[in-house]
Length: 90
Length: 160
Image (cartoon, rainbow over all chains, first blue to last red; front, side, top):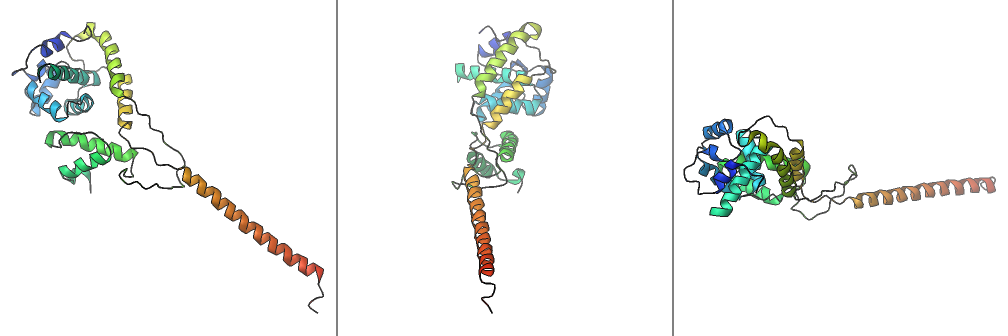
């Protein structure tokens, strides 16, 4: 899709392994730090939360906004990224 | 009992009652679900689990809840937004982007959680019936008063 960012394509293109939480699209330095403070230090831990919320992007978006202070666009970008990763690798 | 003191199971049961789809209630998800429940309880204080129809005369307005699929809307909004922002900031986060259209979409999403409205047409039926009863009583009273007057007028000396 032409509307997705390079970061999004990079993340969705391969298994996430031990990638840091900031490798998720929509999650930059600031949000990454906030997430790490709450124990979400790896992208895979955030994926865990996404799975706990039954891959529901709406619920996940709401959670991410609450947990990290992300705005709607960032949160949805992250949710979309995880969703597509799941579609490809789960 | 406040939501925060309820057990995970009770929270789960409440979510089911309000028709909110949810995954497991654990430490990391609980806060989110408590918030959702609070919102749902505000908009719908009566538990939808019972099948009784409640008649209330105080509130006459009927709330129609439109079920939309907010995901599609958001998806569209996102696509539009992305087109604007992609060139500008790519992956970098910009914390200060205001997003009114998306906020709106979220609100409709919350509404979709609320349960079906209570039927209140019965309430107005009762009002009509009461009004008719009142009229009947009034008519009866007037009739008796009239008869009394007629009797008095016809034979004022009847008693003597």
